[in-house]
Image 1 (cartoon, rainbow, N blue to C red):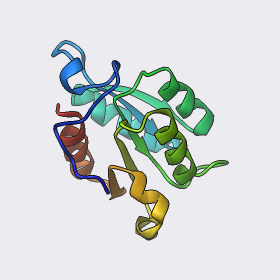
Image 2: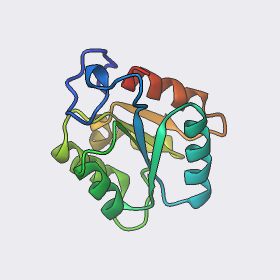
Image 3: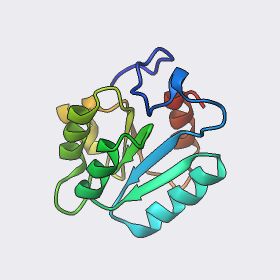
Length: 140
C-alpha cells in the first residue's frame, strides 16, 4: 500500500492545493449493494463531502474519466467486472487518484492487485476507520 502523504500531485479536479475551502471533496462510492451505497452516501454527506455513487464498472469509470472525483471507495465483489480489475482501470485513468478498497473479505488483501490501492479496509457497520482514512487521503 502507498503511504498516506500530504504531498500528492492531484489533477486539476482533485483536492490538495487545488481545492478551495468552498469546494468539498467529491467521493465516488462503488458498490453493488444499494443499501451500502445509501449508508455511505448519508454518512459521508453529513461529514461535508460531495458523494457520487455507482453500482458497477461502467458508470464508475465514466465518472472518473470526467475528472469529477477526489477519491474512490471501491468494493471488490461486484457483478461483472470485479473491484480489483476496476482498480487497474482507475490507475490507468489517473495514477494519483486516491482509492480505498473496501471489502467484506480480508482475503483479498494479499492479492498483488490490491496493492495498487492507497488503503484496504474491511467493511464494518462502524464507518469511523473509513472516514478517518478518507480525511487523511483528501486532506479534509
